[in-house]
Length: 277
Image (cartoon, rainbow, N blue to C red; front, side, top):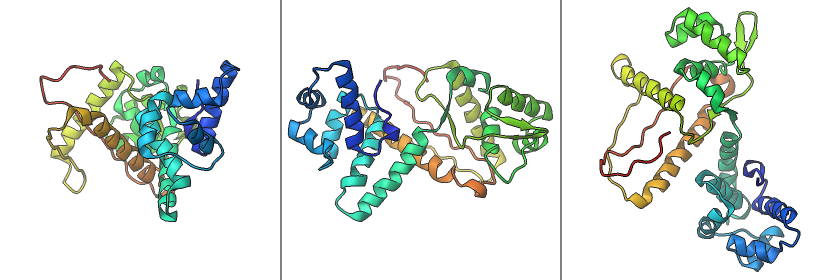
């Protein structure tokens, strides 16, 4: 187990907590050994832990595997560094703003996979998001009308969410506390794949049923370097995080329900098949 990066106030705090955990496991573990294991010089590590400096983006990329950082955690760490050590006040402010977005997304209320299996039909996630519209008095009648589903299906879905603790019922009105719910990322599961299929089918219907000012559907076919795949995925993920944080947290201004869905997949039949998600 390692420190929660999403709650860290600085690179110094994160690396300091990580060192404490390693030292607790092995009282003979020294700062010199820590620097070696991270891939840093002793003087560089000492400066970081004393709050006297950060590290370059290139060096962060090099030591990220030693800290077992995922791509989004590496980006979050860089925002921590820039928020404190960027050269200009404008750069530091931009990094702090970016950090707020990243931390909000990655500390979102996560729906356990076992729970998601029970609510994997698309309308359940839509109902949870409708419950976040503060001006909407959420009832089964309104859900049925807004989502275009039967009253029976709306009521069954809402009560299922209540049973799982994801919605709260007060008479005929439903509500929830969390602003954002996500399912464990990159978890291979048939329920998640089926959810993706449902959303894609809804997008297909929108092609014919919605005017172009109501929806945006775009497809671009591009050949890229295989070595750029992970970086491309990271860029898409970063956009999604920033989009959801900026537009999904508009509070009392929320009115309508939309779906942001993206596909990035291989058309090249010579590609190696990897694990399904």
